[in-house]
Length: 392
Image (cartoon, rainbow, N blue to C red; front, side, top):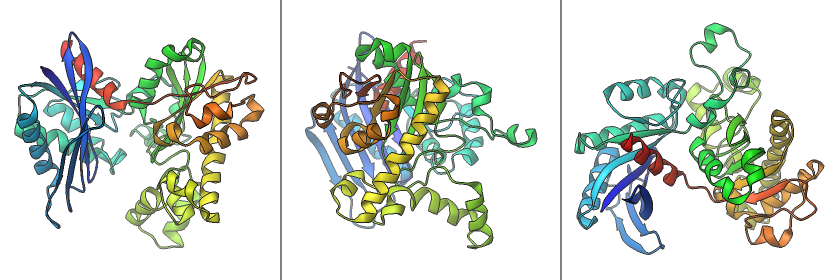
């Protein structure tokens, strides 16, 4: 059996999925993750049906890091692959810059260019690259395909991506890029199976998870997105602030005497739902809480989404459909209900029973906008890109 491995490497974790390849078709085999790889590593793997087939803890205080974690993962796959041949590894790469608007096979030149983009995504890009290098160290001949979270948004017009800054700044790559593109690309591909009008018309997709964004799509192409130069712009997220007046950052520098690293830590790791609530970044915890600050965090999250929905509808010149996806979007009926309630002015009406059961269609018969809940699958999208690139 031939197989493709998908890697999503973070700062302290490596998520992975394995797919079998037969007759140019992909089937999920198993998925898992290596967590806390720099402190108390934990490895778990589940079959596609949810059955746990591996669960390993390392001794307290032991470190793996990306190199040892990747080596362990590849060794485990070889010993449990039942004779499978690993054809290639597909990677989620957060930033492709202006150069990479489609998946690419990784070589030394590609790595060099991805490293040049680290200043544009300092919290993500180094770890994505570390996984690529670790696999190359284990097997230099194994094809690796880089798939970019920014690529789907390359269809946006220049007026959409430009900030009102002088050319000497914008020519250095300071512009809006947009992220979560692999998720939006998957939604665009499967949307015809749900709603032809939404697939060919004006749709806003809401990728709501710990990282959260929204994208306006016309005929399945990205027109505008809430995220911009970095993945902190836009709506509030689990621990990220979302959009701020730049003057707030200047105040932090001048008045609060914070340096750039302290500000980055605040905006990326201590703000958003966690910062407002003071309780948790997890929407499930906040919805279960009776604390006023938890309700405040949820309401702010929904309010900002509804405001951006109006903005993206304006960018589209109207609205035919809304799609909720990702962890919160797929599994938090109260959030969907509140967002849709705040969007009644657009003609949105939902079916309460359908919403409680997670759809897939949750709009009522009296709604002028179709509202859907569609599970995303970034891993399958990466695997498909990897297979397509190999076949080319």
